[in-house]
Length: 551
Image 1 (cartoon, rainbow, N blue to C red):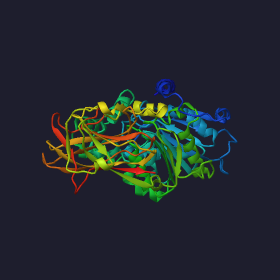
Image 2: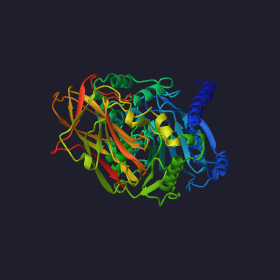
Image 3: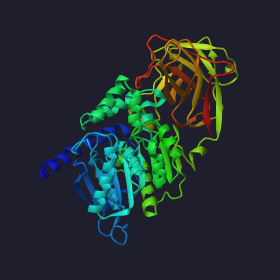
């Protein structure tokens, strides 16, 4: 490729990436705050150097990249004039120009920044590997190149990434001990759980990834087969095995052995990589670590940082790098877990995840009344021996919402997916509702449902939704999760356990909790045959109940 073609390619990618960001910002509105330091920071960034480069990989593939180098005299260099280096793999479907604004900010802060287009996308060579062995080897090759061609300090190597880049930073930490600190934003710890939690295909997430990849990437035969299997519900054990080899959680012992400092940021409503798999991954880390969770959906919290605007998540990530690679930074005395509570926006800090909830509520599920609604907790739910049935494969109207859009609306307008609980058809969804709470209920963590199920088919899926219901019956989604089963004897009762996705939510005083169970959700691949019967019940020996983590 000639140099003129290289430049033209950069122009094309800059226009496409910017268009995506601007369109998202039109929906996102005020996603950031702008401290008074923004103008001086931008002025300093203008003095840093920028150059596009081609970085050859060991197999001959060339990755397109950009290098940002601090201006002479910028603080942060060691005695040999070397600066800490930050490697930034581009996110899914994006190019190295995604991080231009961040690269300039890093250089102004005294970092060498190397951003690159992951193989298989845009003008980088090769085929999409989805954080597989080839992508992981590329991380080390980019680091090798940076140490040989920039004033990068080999003792101060960090990585920052968003989405795919976030997953790659964690995989880099596992396979390259030179990486001292990482900041993974909207990434994954367990890719298998992200695509197949509750033994249920996350079709909305898969469709979103496929749609973004289509105009910008080249699928490898392996990835094309995996994607087809997900959509066709074919050979899912093999899909899970493929995903586990691309999961940082699989190699967590390596990250812990390396002592890599890990910063994780995600959103409560991430429809691609659910927050539970990130909080689980965080808890298993033994080295320096920090977790931040805020309202929003996949990559919406970090979006405005890509335009160079001040952004809470990016500011925290930069502070983490300062702390771990420079021994400075304003976040040194912050507690390890930082949460933004829904829907109030209250900020909470905890020393560890175990401190997030301090008590547990147990709400028994009662039998249905004349209107088909069961009691959730309280004396009315004390009985047992009841049953309530729904028609399988039909949508009650309760659902997880639209991928990305629903979480973004929750972020900017405190408007998650909503339903009118009294109007939900009891033939398609079973409903339980609590009495109004006299005081606010502070839900912190993952709610758990235990219920008895009898189905007329050998396989099926139940979707559990927990709602905040006001006096008018309007329910706002607090959390949800799917759970599938197979190989069951038709007509024989069995216990079903559903772990809802983790959240931090304050139920206002005077509001009720509602639990809805149905068998179909548009963004998931459920197994319940249309027209089959699914019955929920409870016995004295094994009562059905919802367990709530509270504070």
